[in-house]
Image (tube, helix red, strand yellow):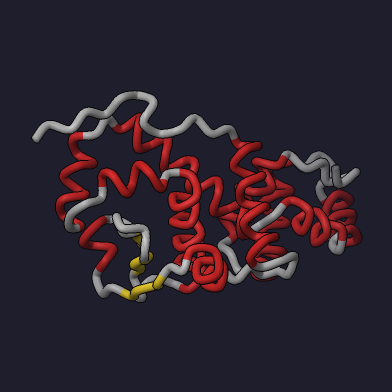
Length: 206
């Protein structure tokens, strides 16, 4: 059976709307504490089962997978813990933003879903993946907490600026990421991306 993929099958979420949805989910089902317990949110918000599946990465080329019945998230237990945490946050993004699409399209096995993706225009599912990644990062690294923890490093930031007075924002993010990422229990890459996305002024913290 031929499946039609209209261009608007994935909602057009803007970054601000995704951030608001992630904040609302975290505040309602977990609270302000850092690091964020994504397992607890998955259970409290949606009653999701988190199911370890050996070799999942090879099977579906993904670290985690939201089931078509929206009842479970399968994940590859061989991946590092910070990667599993982000992958679950990513799949929660799909649950919040794309539930209707996934429920309609993920009706078979992992292999059937892979075949579906091969037929689907990359721009369509690519939009869904960007939205889920953005949601996952916002869920794990909220802006207010990020600013708070940057403020704790003011003296170190000032020392870095004295050593390298012409340091660029990206170089400063490179410097800050490994000093903050463990607090949020995310990778340096995720923390650096959040710093870049938020465009936080390191000097005014606004």
